[in-house]
Amino acid sequence: MTMRAIRYFAIFLWMIIWPVIGQAITLEAYAKNPDGYILFIRHALAPGTGDPSHFRLQDCQTQRNLSQQGVDQAKELGAQLSQAGLKIADIFTSQWCRCKDTAHALTLGEVIEEPGLNSFYQDIVPEKETLARLRQKLGQIDGGEGITIMVTHFVTISAITGIGVSSGGMVSYNPKTGHAEPIERK
Image (cartoon, rainbow, N blue to C red):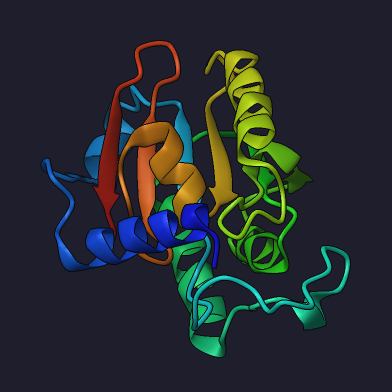
């Protein structure tokens, strides 16, 4: 294991053990006043950590995938988001199968793959370049058309917002101000 992988694993464990610092807002409160027009969603439940050593981006059988509980979790989250009445502008997803499957199971609209949302946890993609691409994408979104959903990974969400969330967790983010808030699920 590289030092970077050990560091990210330590951060991952810390975020699981310690609760998120700061008060989470309800989905209903967010829907009424969505200051953070980017809604990061961590992929739904996919048991384990990281990916197998034989990982290939285009082959879901070589990746850690959603469990049936994860599929159900994503469907329920999609229903909650729909019920909240959010105006969804776009839905972007990491190219990892568990993220794509989560995004599609939300059933909120067309899903667009965005490499800037890919996981750099095991150095499968380079962290610096991946985050630079994501920051560039965030800079192109102004929020005028509604909420942009970004389905991604723990490391990506925490690198941008400083907040760690569990599977299916959400973080509201405003790229202009840098303000981020966790959103609690029902």
